[in-house]
Image (tube, rainbow, N blue to C red; front, side, top):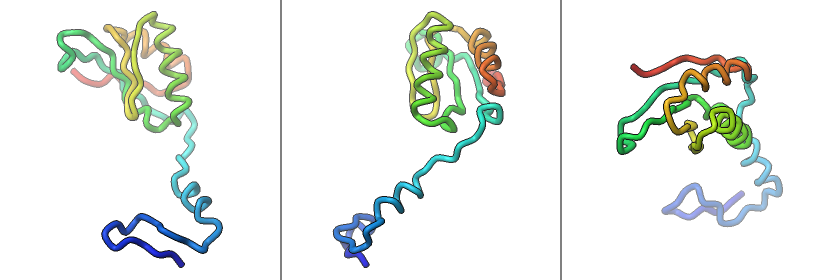
Length: 116
């Protein structure tokens, strides 16, 4: 069916199977859950940021990349601050925990305040 390098078992060198790409795309599809079922954690963080305050939103790995970017932009505009998006969290500059929690609840997410 396919020849594989001996030292790298996952590298396909040649395949006669014509639908190989469709197999990989089906396996890598993300599970789609309604936003009302997703629980996001919101916490205030200062440690490891040179004394600067930040609001961290966790649990966003359940969202697809486009929705994660869109949500981060909406939050930054709502709070009037900067921020960034990573694979598993959204970071908003400043202590915006209360604002972010209200915004996410209006968007239909379940929100928990995490941390101390």
